[in-house]
Amino acid sequence: MFSQANLLSDGDISIVKEVLDLNYKKPDVEVYMNILHKTKEVVQNKMGVHSELHPLTFLDTVLKDYNHLISV
Image 1 (cartoon, rainbow, N blue to C red):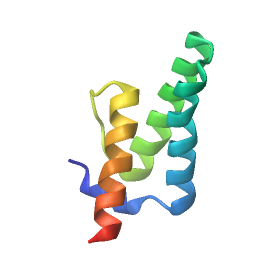
Image 2: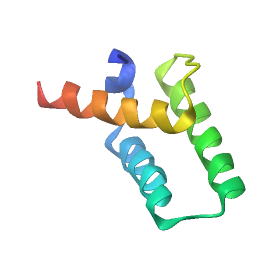
Image 3: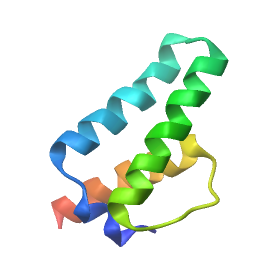
Image 4: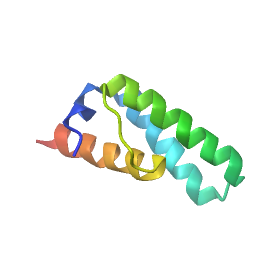
């Protein structure tokens, strides 16, 4: 969905993974949503895209796209 995921560094993807993993630790919802929105904004800027997807869905999709692109 986002071929621009290849513009992200391994460090960027590591941060995306950490943010997504926080969801399983049952964080404070308000704090977690703030982290998700900020991470989505930074990733969108680095990739030069804008998405209306929910931040969790967007970051998950970017991670999957990145993994697909680097494995090809």
